[in-house]
Amino acid sequence: MNKPFLLKPAAKDYLWGGSRLNDEFAKNIDMSPLAETWECSTHPDGPSIAVSGEFEGQKLADILESHPEYLGEHPQTKGELPILIKFIDANKDLSVQVHPSDEYAMKYENGQLGKTEMWYVLDATKDAKLVYGFSRDVEEDLVRKTIANGTVEKYLQKVPVKKDDVFFIEAGTVHAIGAGALIAEIQESSNLTYRLYDYDRVDKNGNKRELHVDKAMKVANLKSMAEPKQPLRVLKYKQGVASELLTRCKYFEVYRMLVNTERRQKVYFQADNLSFRVLLCINGCGTVSFEDSGKKNILDIYKGDCLFVPANSEEIRIHGKLQFLDVRG
Image (cartoon, rainbow, N blue to C red):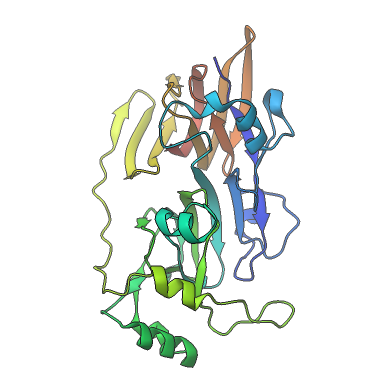
């Protein structure tokens, strides 16, 4: 039976980042600003690394290449990890951007994946917003003109966000995370972003970041979009744990798990032979224990930690008071 292991993230210092991932998640990464941590990633632009178990020090991509059975039998995996999981600290507004579909990326971006994603809001200031599509139908000429003269924002749909909100961002949706939002993002394993507008900002070297307007116009949905509504969520309770489905699409399923074993309940967890699972701890602390060569192995789990659970895993016991995002391929 396969055994879980903790991951260490790659980090990004994009100009809109802040310090909350270090301050509140104890990432201890010497980077300022710290914008993103790629918690579970095999993408070459930001690979995560095992920090426990027999594979300690190895890239997750290398582990999975050597052990493709860890991905499970789900056809979506196709021999590679199909997802990428991030924490995002938006101290300032992210650029207005759009991601291509798989079909477009496959044809025009050398066989890469497109990018559909979901956001779970970990925290948000009272005035935090996100951009979700256009507020009315627009024509390409208008979009290009308003990007050039800096007025495109008045055509964008801005939606208030609050802690515990969930948003599903399909490829082709023009979007941006606004200042004040702390996000967990689950997405396809892709780093394809077409930047439409960046508020005329300059980086630390005084240069404006590149825009990709021509590419964006080929993939963006220019129709007005209904304001996203929060999905109906139903907590299901078992002894010591409650869970709810946040998002299900062809790329991933995401659940929120609330574990509380203060009354000595036992919470058991296992990945079947169909798919791996990833546990991203978003609050609390506790332990994960499992059998390893006849001995009990115990991992301490804290807010911000990420645990990769291979398909066909050993039975895992979770103890403590924690919240996880439970991501399945």
